[in-house]
Image (cartoon, rainbow, N blue to C red):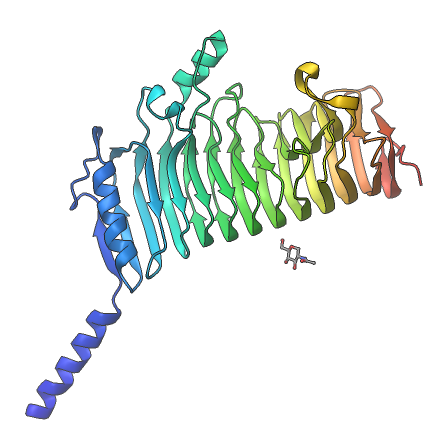
Length: 388
Ligand SMILES: *[C@@H]1O[C@H](CO)[C@@H](O)[C@H](O)[C@H]1NC(C)=O
């Protein structure tokens, strides 16, 4: 008899110890009414979750939760998962977040996951302000991870961010899966996903419709994998702008595999400032891509200098090498379907075209090369202008 009781006690206590703990933000004071500021409740949930040595879940039930600028800081004792069935809503007055530049930020966290949920940045007011040319704040990024590792974001939707929707900055080992981004095709600076200074980042099954780059890649990015991406409207997938700074880290080992661009301004782009810089881009693969009617389906532009300001000599220092375009087909919205405009100081080398077929309506498409070396094999149309 006494042996039996002892056994039961042991079993139940070990189960209780191992069970993950859930913190429901509503239990901590959040209100899903779209009006009540729930920032404090989310921070309370974070403090509890982050302090717990075992894995914890922060649960956000259905409803609209108004959040002000919020910073979730590590380091945490165990892994923390946000499971979100609701919508997080930014203040409708864009001036509240617009000058700080941030809405939801995670800093110095390890092992954080976000599963599901909608972020509503309510950016339309700021876009309208910018369209009138008034003195508007620059705007806030909706979700940003900085100095973090082992991050997983699955099934998250980000809509109408004031500026960039999702930013991965100085992070390691990040997975973004089934992320959706939606914003108006003419909303300014609303990049879908921006990756910078980060290594081992994978973005898979993303659907991005926005007003700026669907995915933009900044200096210091290495081992970036993008697969099954739908982009458009938007400005395409862009490595850059790079080389604005004189001293800049390079971009290395970037893959885009299986992507469709529909009505985007560009397809796959590499863009650098026409300024002196130590930056570089090397080891890029664009493979299995369909581009429907982009103005610039394939473009390297090393002559970027908006308003012609601050580009002494108008020459980029960024060296671009080993870029492969394989199995790419589709249509161009302009005659020059392939454009390689490289720097006279650091010409592009190792550009490879392999089975590329781009049309321009019923007219003939052309390619344009400046300071670009490389090779073409398989079917390549329009024919390559790369120097061997
Ligand atoms: C390049 O990046 C991929 C992930 O995107 C990684 O699997 C691979 O090992 C990297 N290659 C090198 C040489 O680091």
